[in-house]
Each structure stands twice: as C-alpha cells, then as structure tokens.
Length: 278
Image 1 (tube, rainbow, N blue to C red):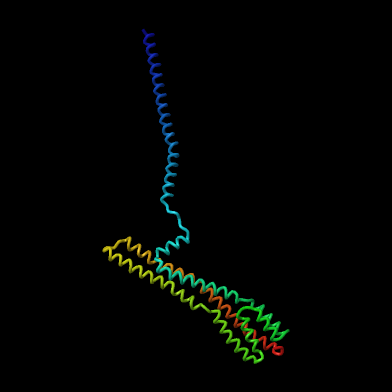
Image 2 (cartoon, one colour):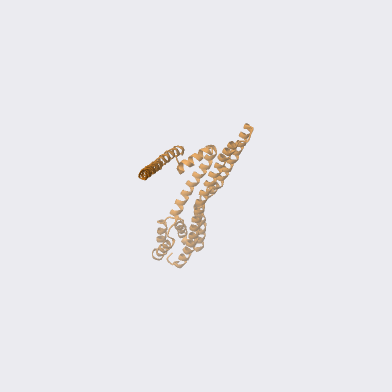
C-alpha cells in the first residue's frame, strides 16, 4: 500500500514537474515571440520613420518656393512698387552713377606725382630756361601742369602778372574739377523726394480702396502700405549710394585743389630763384 501511495506521489510530482516546465517554456516562448514582435516593430520603425521623413522632405520641397537671387528680388520689388513711381528713382540713380564714374575717371587722370613734376620743372628752368619748362608742362596732363604753363607763358611780363595769371587760371581749373557736382547733389536730393511722393500717392490709393470696400481690410491696408513704402526704400538706397560717390569726389577735388595751391606757390618761388635764366 505504501509502495502504491509512494508511486502515485512520485508520478504526481513528475507530472506536475513536467507541467510546470511546459508552462514555463510556453511562457518563455510567448515572451520571446512578443520580444521578437516588438523588436521587429522597432526594427521596422526606423525604416518607416526614414520613409516618412523622406516623404515629409519631398512635401516640404514641393511646398517651398525656390529662393530668388538678389537681382530677381530687386526686380520683383521694383514691379511691386509700381514702375510708374519707381522709374524716376531708377533714372536718378543711373544718371548719378554715370556722372560719378565720369568724374572719378577725370579726377584720377588729373592726379599726378606733384613732387616729381616740380623737380622736372625746376631742372628744366635751371638748364633750359622757360621754354624747356613749358615743354615739360605741355607733355604732362592735369590741372597743375596747365596752371604752370599759363604762368610760364607770361614770364616775360613780370612776376606780378605771372602770379595773377596762376590765380585766375587756378579758378578755371577748379571749376573744371567741380563740373557736374551740382547735378549729382540734385540727384541725391531728388531720389528720396520722389520715393516719398510715390509713398504718399500709394497711401492715397490704399485709402481710396478702403472707401470703395466700405470696410477696413487688413489685407488691403497692409498690401497698399507695403507697395507704397517700396518707393521710399528705393529712393533712400539710391540717395545713399550716390552720397558715397559724392563724398569721394569732393574729397578728391579738395586734394587736387590743395596740390594746385602748393604747386602755384612753388612755381613763383622757382621763377624768382631762376630769374636770370627766365
């Protein structure tokens, strides 16, 4: 009897043991399956995320407008600002730039090495007299050489006449150096004024549109103000650019005038020094 009971107990223990092992293995398999499912979903997530990112990037690229260059942007804003009012500002800028370039070229050609020129004139006066000095002046460009030539040309009339001639012809050369600066200053003042005029008229048109609509529409007001202010922006830009060129030209003229005055004094001194050869 005891053997039967012990045999049943051992069989029950073995049965319950295998059952527990089976359930444990099943639980492990289920855990592995769930882990594999999670891993597979996680593994699939980067691919799906990458695909979604690519699709999003494509959508963004299709939605984004192509960026315009500087010239294309300026053209677009020029058209938005109404060519009727933007054209006068553009004309002022073009004429002012053309005049500035002409003045800069002329002033650069008028600039010479003053010290070297004075040495050449003095050497010519010392060795060959007035005629040799006049030849040096004739072969040299610029206002200083022209003033020297006029003074040397009247050397036989006395030093007082030479001095008066140098002063008078120096005024003529100064006028030639400052030629066109009044027009350039006019364009500098006119460009922003035309811009303000376009702004005022654009505002008037915007308020007229509000009166026609019978209500204040933010789109109408903002669009009208933006378009009208573009003329002011372009006018101020044109004035700033031309003002920079104007200041450079004025400083260049001032430097040449100072060189002319110093050289004129040096000419009188040289002629007094070499009076016998003159």
